[in-house]
Length: 231
Image (cartoon, rainbow, N blue to C red; front, side):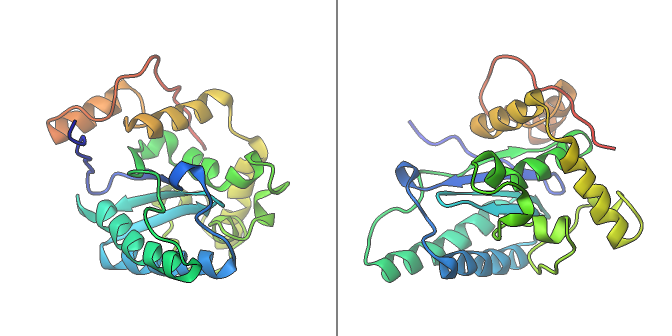
């Protein structure tokens, strides 16, 4: 069966997840994480894709980014993979695939879910019981978004910027969102949308996306995601 094509809309954020083959590790030491971030940064700049949040886990990657062009996200992922996979294969004397098939992708209703999705991405190490708080994990955008550490890869989304006028106040407001946590329905909605490739949002958002693309997007799934807004 031919692969179902992916579709993106310029200006609409997308949640991207790529896992290691058979869920095996894709990062083995600090140099590997740094190499991936270097090529991801080059790819994001080259193909006009603004990365708002990321986390590099031992065996998978989460990204939240907004493509400037329909092909921006796909080309960013392809470029990063074309450089990172040979780097790992050469370094560790391995061959073959590093990633488990194609990456997962879901367009995100920014007004309803963007800030929640940012927290979902950056909370991955905490949910995996690797650290007690997101600040303790070195390979995520939380250090930039929550603590103000410069990160050339991160491009703030307008909704994040609008949390407060001054950077220090903005970071404090963002940290407060983490204190509130994510409810189960929101977390499950994010997971289901990315797993199926379905737009993350209510019925009106999904219909808007499919109308703009003139095609159905993702796979049918039971239920609908709960709408979650962050103030």
